[in-house]
Length: 162
Image (cartoon, rainbow, N blue to C red):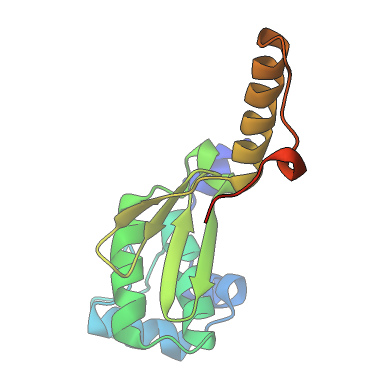
């Protein structure tokens, strides 16, 4: 998916971010004061000042809100958000990525073959598709059967010695 550059480099107000994320302005203020998720473009600097959030901030806030709604504690969400800071949400390849929640684990799936455990310091986990392995073995056995002159031996004709 190609992103509209105007959106990617836009600056969003607290009210806009609240609408985009489903979080309240009060929640956004609280998270900013905690230093949990502060706006990248402009932080509050006293009465009457306005926060300005980046597109990446909005993405992280939306995901953080979903994790909080799923029952994750603020400390866990903070670790996920810190890891997500390194993952640029404006990259075109990120649109196919998935955030998987499995019990108390939060996994980032950037492809069909890679998972990153966001709560374990970004530990990489590899995924091996079983269906592909089955298909590979079938092709290899078919190739072997063509090469050998006797073909394959039926399992029923092999006696097991115990």
